[in-house]
Length: 415
Image (cartoon, rainbow, N blue to C red; front, top):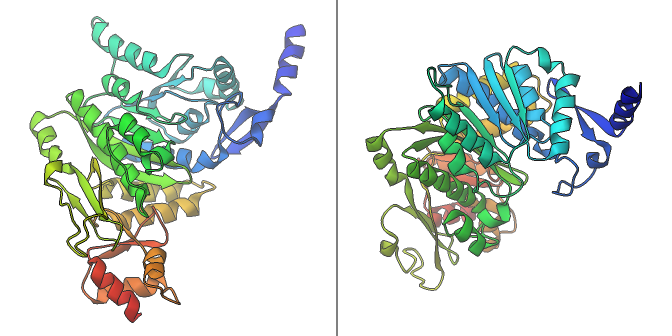
């Protein structure tokens, strides 16, 4: 009786939230608080779209690339909502590690599993309280030391920290299956990646950022470059399947491969960005940094040319993967369904377009235009001139195009 009263008292401090097909508890004091490390168990309602997209991405991976039952590692599970949602939505999960270093979070995970009736799920569920790198090391070690039948390495690992993921990426590569594994990596230290704190970016990601109108894509490409280089250290390579920005975070989904010749070929995807903050010209540069031009080829200015990098200069999305996610989004009735549809359609447009983008409002302001042309008018006008153009999910007021900066400015003046 005393145990039941104690449990009832503990549950009275919890609030229930519904997300996707799952219900889960969070601590009542955390419900309306600003997301921070001071929360009892970390929860951010704005990250629901991250969890929606992650669910769709894991299921798309399962359909397109995976050949085995899924073994998933949710290394920073907090309340466990991400794991519970994938267990409810995906039918091919064989085993899932639901881990958090916070003992209160682990207690909440168990409560949420019970609330959703997950203990009856056919998948093997392993709840643990470990530091993420320790968990990765343990998984990697077990795959080498087990006698007879070696346990299958995880084919999906999710890293979703508060801040930078850089500390955990090497451990994840050691734990994940080396061919066709799916790494899902979030970075919330956007001020670092977007060039507000450039020295921190050089220290954390070994790359120089730029705080420009297209800094969100620069940050995403720096993150992919860093992930790829850590993969190379582990004799592996990556193929980005989806990279997206929302609110205050970047999320990268990438596929692993192991082939020395192929890895060497992917070195051409590393490069630099040069940008003139006088006229707005930018270009990617794949050669050695010593070969970077010291003046702008358009306005000929010397003092306004800057660079960012090294960074990833090739595709950051995979069309087949995105198309599968679009189909899955139609199947599931997520609360953010329309928002996800818009996001994925914009990402679909970006594929095979030039890296980076032009912000129409900034260009119009520089040209001192009294009226800013509508985006649809600009899209139509550039297509009529024979150039490629798309919108971008990184910035709804920007365009990607192979038209040069001078022609874009002239067109805006005409319109």
